[in-house]
Image (cartoon, rainbow, N blue to C red; front, side, top):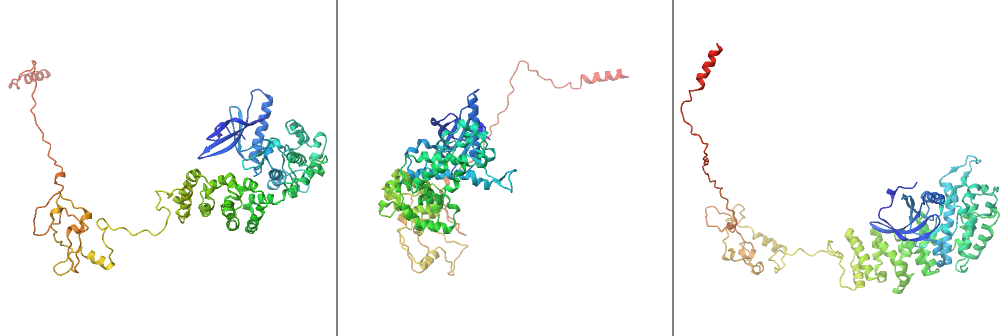
Length: 598
């Protein structure tokens, strides 16, 4: 199902210029920003109101998006999202371009790898899914398992190429299950499918060959596709290329469907079993391999790669050779990676020259430095001195150095010696590269120096432990019996230098030599660099004390209250009251009221 307008990818920006325009949809390049910026492709099907053709195209476009979402495979175009907006249908996929736009620049070996990818996608649709998703045919005898689906439009227009050169199968708008593959369905969709890829048996509407062999439609179309893309390429670049072209023309495009070989059997043809294809397939399926298979593979990998073109290996296999799984493999670290992580021009027996390194491998190495994995970072830093000269100063300062700094900050053990920092320093042509001021240590993990002496002891000579014990004993005040008195302390008189008007310098006072004659005696107060502003009082003794904070004491006085007698303002309406006569008036009247009650 298509998503609503609200399901549109956040941070998506679609370019104005179209990459490809067809009758049913338009392809655009786009970017999406979610922390990091990524490139993708967006297919848009514009819906014209009241147009019957537009509605039919929109329906087939939605079916293609639905099939991309259902059928997931490394060799099938990767589905990301789909939604409706303003009556139009949007489909977001991985970043691709049509094969027709890059086919002229493809070599025979690149086309061979691309056809191998398309072939694996078709085998996945025909056979592998039939085993994964078992669909039982109710009319089949003895529990025969019905195969799953047919693409029905294998052609150059249905193939897309991602940035690393890998071919992906798309154009799933006419895909259907084998149970739905009928002559009437093929006739209804024939006008929109590639004419040269239409099998001859479709001409006979009464033919029963389609119902007997469901995969015959894609077999014929794949033979046409292989013949077209290899027609103008030299035959000497890939082993058994001429034989494969002959097979495509005489067998896959044979009029009789029963003569056409199974697509899965083509995977064993010498055209798809040479060393490069084997290396590419093994690296893609590396997680599925056993430890023994990995050991045998990486021990012989260098020898096999040396027989192939250098630029082809770097451009087509660079991402796989520098993948995380390869970097963390023990056998690869010992037998393979030392030859990859060093250019051959730097005095080492590397597989790639500096020019090839800068063109193809530097972007991949920068990407690997951004992987937040301590083991990957440590491995790259171990070999960093061999390939650091392939980076520009801007790449080192803006991309490599910040990642090394973050790695050291999160896990200091990833940089075990200053040699990596020295490599950066020599490459950047500076004296020192600072790993970071906010880290606990720069780049060295040597023993920290001894804690310096306190102020006033800079010029003090080193003393033994016995001398230090004797020096600390000078702080104790002996009593009359030779012991140490804790309760009473001897009063130390203040010198003139201790007055507030004269402040002695600690460095100057520290130069005073302290005599030590073996007896416990108090040293001079200036030697200890301690100023006693308020000595402890001694029993039976009184003296005037100098209070250095006397002027700082606040003076708090009680708030004075001024009482003022209130004067009543004079008015012409004032009435003077005459005392007396309070008994008159009301009492007589009350007596009269009493008489009335009687």
